[in-house]
Amino acid sequence: MVWRNEYQDTLKMTTSYADKPVELGNFLHLRTREREILYNRIHKKADTVKYDNFYTTGGDAKTLKRIEDELDHGFSSLMEILTVIHSKEDFNHPVSFAANALYALEKNGLRNEKMYRKVLYPILKNKAEYLHAEGIAGAIWAISQSQSAKGDLVLELLKNYEEKKFGTDIVYVNNTKFSNETFVSAEGTHGIEFDSTAELTKMYLQDHIVCLELFEGLKNLSNQSLGSEASSRVAEVLTDLESRQKITSDYTGIISRSQAEQELYQQLLPK
Image (cartoon, rainbow, N blue to C red; front, side, top):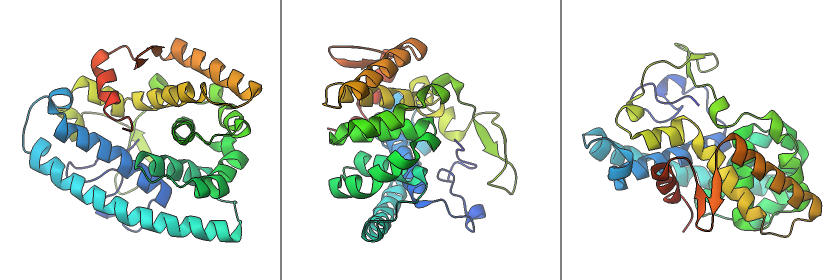
């Protein structure tokens, strides 16, 4: 992911790129993720920041308020778009839009089963092969929460799981100067990383949350009626995640290699 250019900037959205708007679904996904980061830094300082300073008090709180306002407006626009797609029954839309919209709606407590079934699920099913790792994880997590998953949709989402890059396979980049279309390898420390704990950095900047959300979603799906083929595939991917990403579970839920990281993740789970 491409993070802040300057501390006061929000993710991927600087005034320099005002003429290149981010697709709405991606915008809502990024804002949802950033809200999680800031909320945890503000309200769980003992677990997420190394020390209190201006940025982790007034700075984070001000940015969080702006993000929440942007999410409110963004979701209003999203519902208008979904209504039009549904009325026209035109499902030839980017699969990233469907995955990002589904994840953002569910993560923000705005579940809409009708739009899930009539709009977002058909797009996901038709174009699942083009999703990247984060899209697969987000979609699996979201449909497992709503408990409205169909076995054929789950199978399509997990069909190309082995070809995707999760966790330690991720490479982070910065955008080149004066461009949001070309990138170079990331160097140095970003402002939000500098005063965050190792657990928060691993969770968000090293992509651990994607693996954990995929794992949680699959665990939820393993207890739902999906049909034998889909249930078998869910169990297969769970085993692979446990092996490659060192994620395991017991009776209390998900456990990662870092107990502190696991406690932080639990704060993000829907209540």
